[in-house]
Image 1 (cartoon, helix red, strand yellow):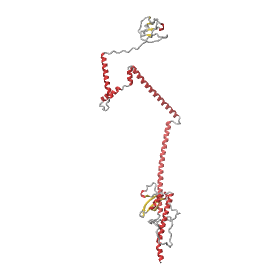
Image 2: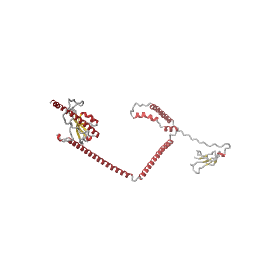
Image 3: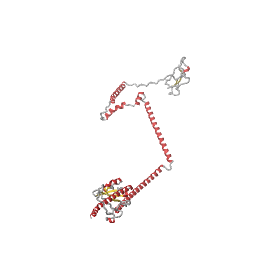
Image 4: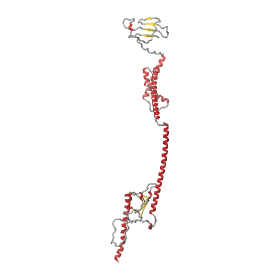
Length: 401
């Protein structure tokens, strides 16, 4: 191997490495002005050094300068194959082409209705898709001529290296971000009055203590409510018993208290036009006792038994007093109605009621008093008319005598 210094058009020297055969082993001057000296004394592996004169010296030429040497890439040597190898290659190419020709219709017109029978059937029916679905990169490598040998391997290695480097950079950025967050958390924790772990334990203990106290207070509250309901229920029962005893002190009317007087209600009399009288009586009769309108009767906290006609029910309903049958009363401990219907007498024309005055409002009590006063006035008028009718025969007998 020898080094050649080729002449160029500029005055400076240019160097190019070409393969040349050694000219001679002595000092010679060529026809183009090149000086050659053998370098066999240094080393046999170095070869000979050939020095060429610049083109502007015009050595060995009297007209035009010499053109520079152009080197071309040598075509690759074609491996000579034997006729047997060429025949085998042709046969392989024909078989590959025939298989591709058979696989193409199988891909274009697939059998999607028939199920697979075995593994061999799966391979025969699905393999053509893999044959025709070659990656685009592999096809480009094959068409460009760079898909073989070291070029393809080097490019694949570069791609893998680029991917690995990109992934490594991403991991590094994520690691740095995690370290930064951890550092900020430590700084923030250090600025607090107490460490985070101790503060967490203390907060948990305080929360547990407050939870226990809340549960204890809830239990005490439920107990107090139960006691209050029991006391109120006992009071209601005691007041009801006291009202019943007050209303019925004895069975004899002689021992009946002065504030209570039974009211006879002869409601069998048809109200309407007054009864016709033959003459007016002249004897003195004791007038019936008038109701005391200004007297406030004794009001007991319990239920008061009252007998009212059926015709007074609309007036009670207008006042908001709804009698409830005794069979429909709510159980003990629940709100009781103000009026309870105990039964009926006089062929259903009179109703026996128990009215709890403590459950009535002031307007309801006033309305109930007006209803009772009107009933008493009406009963007094009926009694006076009855007494006048009874005195008429006596007056007639006196006149006849």
